[in-house]
Length: 297
View 1 (spheres, rainbow, N blue to C red):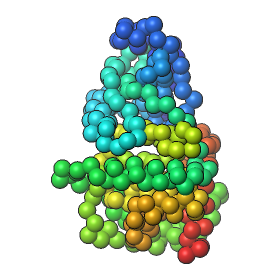
View 2: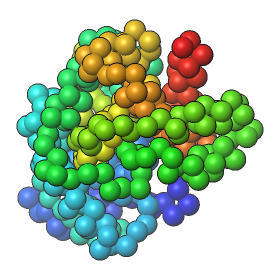
View 3: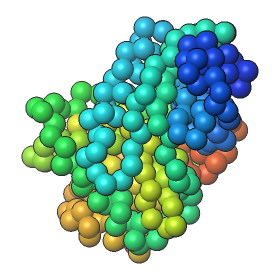
């Protein structure tokens, strides 16, 4: 999926675990067939999961990133009735793998499909978003370069996406949409805590209800609309409206959430067109929902 992607084999993972965590030597290790783009995931026994970054980076920076992720996971743990991963350990480079890696608790459930989850599930997700927003920021504000700040700072990235999408999407129409979206103001609403990446791959389902949320390392303060990307990645109009009602989102917040979903989806379509078709298809489906909603109102 990436030009600098690392190969993480079951043999390597077995060797790393046996050497660094001998208490788990008797546990079976299985690779998880996931649609994610950041980490390779391996189950350790029934209750643990090891995560290995797929892209090369400076080991010291990777280690600091894992510490930040673990701190975020601990901050979220127990703040909602829905299960989230608990940090367990950090592994070190070795056996040909050049980066530190992490171990956390395994959560049961099935990854959401994004094909249109039911209304009760939408209400569950609204509860999770509300719970996350209720976590005190402690005076922190958005300081990142990704989604969650000022929409207008993302023009260069959207231009890259438009150029790469000329032959696969209706770029003139999408450019016109972004021209309007980028002007949506933040207003006086303060930053609140967000999960930051509520795509289907990070949402777990059991019997039609929300079972848990994973990949929580991006937890942090941002535009309150950021986690509303889930409305467009996961839901058709009926359940999407249920999520909005439960969160009491006003028109401006709702439209900003639609804009953040647009921003994310535009990158997914072209970047993963060949290397991860399901992720590319997610982007297409999300854009179709956004375009349809725009034409309706």
